[in-house]
Image (cartoon, rainbow, N blue to C red; front, side, top):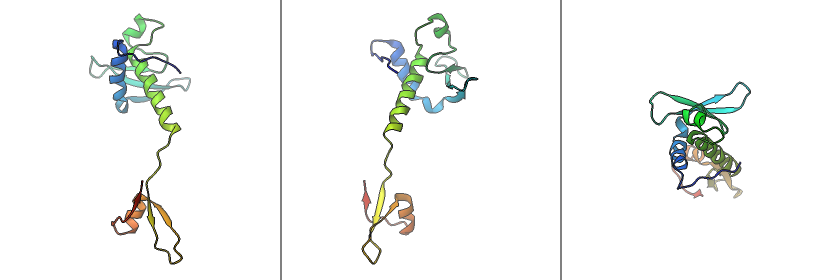
Length: 126
């Protein structure tokens, strides 16, 4: 999906502000199974709009049919960010211990390594 975010477009600026709060959105499913979000109104406390990458229930979306409102732009931005994060998974830090008699290196997840060593951390690979 391609869309443009422009610093000259007030909707784009507002969309970025809205997308920054994506952790507070309600996660929904439309009747046909599509993902949708309950995005809070910036003007009216307690009001949420049902938004997916194509449509929104806000007044602006109803007035400007065919144009993406700030809520749709925010959802598109959020979805693209999620896709990008899934393509490049984070590597978990590991802890190396050389405590086997044969010199074999044992790699453990960081949390497990700290617990196994009584809470002391000697070497961390990043």
